[in-house]
Image (cartoon, rainbow, N blue to C red; front, side, top):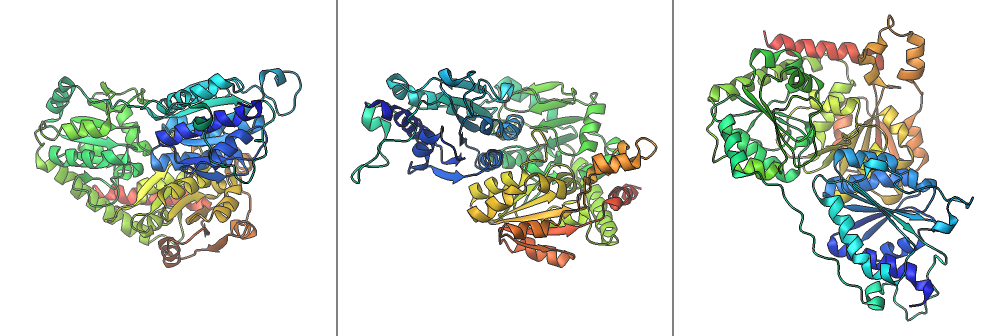
Length: 576
């Protein structure tokens, strides 16, 4: 093989193997050192390539693709600081258990630590945020032959539960561009044609099934007892089995927005107002005898605080891997697949007295009615009403991506159940606000259906360049920005008390008003943008399924804390 062909032979062998394993999306950012990777992945007929100017946006876009599809997505960038731009998305992927294949181009060893441009230390750049790191030397004939094995190793590490990101740091020597190809040459010739590279080994990922003994023990614990299911973000395939088990066991369900149990026809006793009811003392009045936590802890602070404060109530965590018990209150940790565990239990569990679930349904109905009445007396627009309206108006089958900070808390506390199904996603691994629009764009692209993102104005400012990506890639995402000119959530904290912190200092460095007209910013990059001042306007814009479009809803940040207190008081009164 001609020496000039080694780079491309290696990357084509890698791309061929990953495509065979199931790779369907790659996010590529421009550069020179990554040219062999760009050519191999962009020319592959089975892989869709997404071009991104900004590596930070690309990282979050890939995160959204992988989060929505449930399969690994590849990232490709050049060497130097470009690689560091992936870090926020890699951190979120690590904590949210999202499979990413981070392929960074690197300088060869002779160009490191000698003052060469665009050469930084990329060895284990992401630290413990990746499940596996591999630094490959510059391609040679042996590496071309072994590329399918490398691809299989990376794929398995990323996809095996708990899923997460892996990092392949790939050094390339010049020449980086392929030799001139004549008119008869095929751009798709694979490394396998040139070197006879083998196909990747078949990957069989283990599913962690519970043992018969563990199932029998759990069934005995649940049978006939007042059971509370606290359901965090679980795979879509597990939603039905968990709901069926809850209905069979007569369990009450506190469901996070990402659980899949807050929309569609769900027979289980799902308590929509769990956050507000728990804060009002409903769990103290009618406590469970046993709690099963499925997946990570929920968004609701009042719920997980109650769990933390009541280790005397037996708590079982069912999660496929890792140790997700930040409350330190679990008595049993079952490192098993959520769906298969729930599916195996209905035939083993004796139901609780039906009065347990029926009582919680009545309490939830009264609280929901009180909340609806209280919201109707508040002037629109306000943050809780916007969240409620967006969740209700999202088209059936659509994707709703919710920003961290206040939006996900408002959806959790104030979003009412809906009879038709939507998918709700959020970046709640590390719970940062950066990259929200980019992640929503990737998730919408993966789903192939209209998407909505509900986001605050400060989070939108973090990701303004994603607006240009939405226009350029023509992704049908409706971006609803709740604009209260600053960080509204901080007004709920002790720091907002002027007796604790100087009011001017708080506003300047924590409240952070900015005065940016986001409609004007969106229009500047060619996006359709408008404001919504009424419920009807917001319902129409969200329900249309059009996009890309930005909808700005102006609210009063100074009223946020007092309004939430009034709504919480209305729910508390419903218990009397």
